[in-house]
Length: 134
Image (cartoon, rainbow, N blue to C red; front, side, top):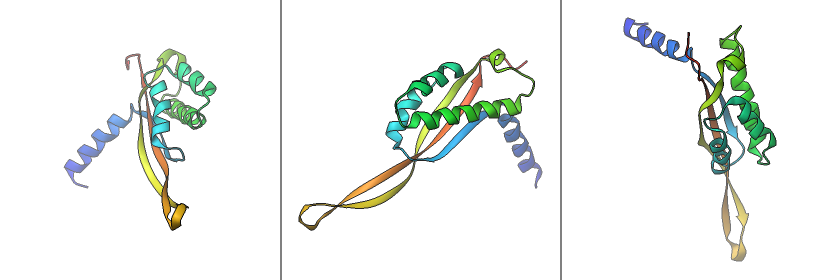
């Protein structure tokens, strides 16, 4: 590996050291429905977001709840010996991207066929701390 590549790789690794994230790939709901839940918890404290996701009636709320718990676990693995309550974690950024689509045909009148698109999405959740990194 050349010197420039090594320097860029080390810089990238240093920025990821303070990035606490979790990804959900190929979630089986449409991106439009998942964005409703993402908008509901964006920018909230972790405790409040967990409460909202726990009592939400939406189908994707359960998967988002597990994703948030995974992101919290990732934070704990990078910050051993620190307490979550002292760091005041919050959902810094969450975004939902469209995933792959399964295309199916449904029978329609007069010998035609209507196309059905079964959509999936990819969710990325990034946590942040409101306390300075001392």
